[in-house]
Amino acid sequence: TQLLEQSPQFLSIQEGENLTVYCNSSSVFSSLQWYRQEPGEGPVLLVTVVTGGEVKKLKRLTFQFGDARKDSSLHITAAQPGDTGLYLCAGPTTSGTYKYIFGTGTRLKVLA
Amino acid sequence: NAGVTQTPKFQVLKTGQSMTLQCAQDMNHEYMSWYRQDPGMGLRLIHYSVGAGITDQGEVPNGYNVSRSTTEDFPLRLLSAAPSQTSVYFCASSFRSHSSTGTGELFFGEGSRLTVL
Image 1 (cartoon, chains in turn orange, brown):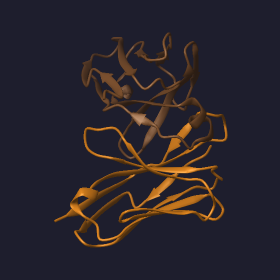
Image 2 (cartoon, rainbow over the protein chains, first blue to last red):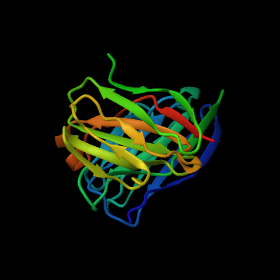
Image 3 (cartoon, chains in turn brown, orange):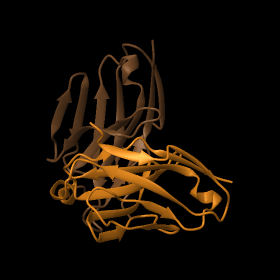
Image 4 (cartoon, rainbow over the protein chains, first blue to last red):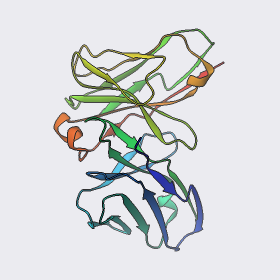
């Protein structure tokens, strides 16, 4: 069974600090996605990484796909209160097409 | 700009009752899916569909039924509700070609919070 484990589970930081969230698996993924979910809403896609070693930047957010395509990280520089939310990684399983699995999530709170 | 619409947003059921969660999308997406979200467990796939008349099971299908008679709608039926089905349910859709490679964006509804007493 493929699993995506995220760490840390919870993170509370002050505005302006940097942070990194990790998404790890023992399985190889053809691609990984990162979503952000705010209270009372559904997740919204932030980025998709496809190539091992790939780095993508979205303003203050930097996403990296591991060389072996088993892990990914999300780094936020100078966090702001607007970054508060639940961050989820997700990827397609190898057990069948169209089946996505999601990580356990990292709940981030940025204090002003 | 409706996107993915879920109804109802909140529902309380008694054990043994049945109900249907509705999901509709207006983006002409072939792929639609249902997830449940429980604390500390992320999102788990219940059922999915790659087009009208085609459905398949996800990770946690027991106790749920689906059907897909149109491209737009993908209802989720709880046959006999149990307290273990207390959760927040999300419907998501995307283009089929993107879903098969895992590179397409999943568009989610706002969720339906279900409590089973």
